Amino acid sequence: MSYTQLAIIATLSALVLDLFIVRTRLVRGKAFWTSYAIILPFQLLTNWWLTSRNIVMYNPKTFLGKRLAGAPLEDLLFGFALILSTLTLWVWLGRSRSAAKIDR
Amino acid sequence: MLIFTVVGSFWLEIFLRVGVLKQVRRLLLTIVPVALLFITWDAYAISRKQWHFDPKQITGIHGPFHIPLEEYLFFVIVPIAAIMTLEAVKKRRPHWVVGR
Image (cartoon, each protein chain N blue to C red):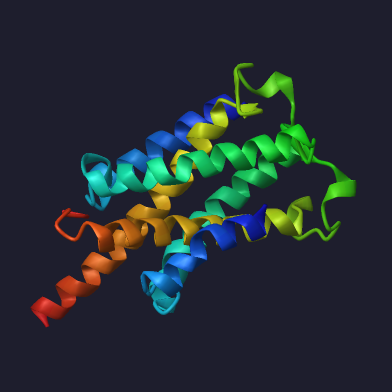
């Protein structure tokens, strides 16, 4: 599978996890998007650093060809899926813990 | 760049007292499953030569599946940084409902 296909699958999986499986619904609230807005510039800065110095190199055959801050556009989806799935699990685990406290 | 990420986010732990690093169990249960999936992805991408790393600019230490040490650290540090960011946002905006 290409980077493009994997990036789309990962993003959709993270959205399904958040919206339908554990139902944290982070993408429907402000806190997630504010956090993402803080994280994104740092991701772009890091991508630019890693690609402009050729520390990481991408095979042009595996992505669509559009680049942002040096890295393939697909990298945005990679980062989004990583962050969303992490925060979804984190919030879900915190919620089930506080729910357990209330239910006793 | 990993040090940059640590410096850029871990101050939130100290100054905003987000308390992320204290919740060891919750942190491990979050990081480990996500890291396993993304490391699998990384291993696949490296094996298919979708991306590669300049051997002169990494430590040269490799873990399983020819993945450089830096990549393993990435999948630990970046998620922690993201969690700290969310917790810092929650701290500053306590009225925002998260996870309902």
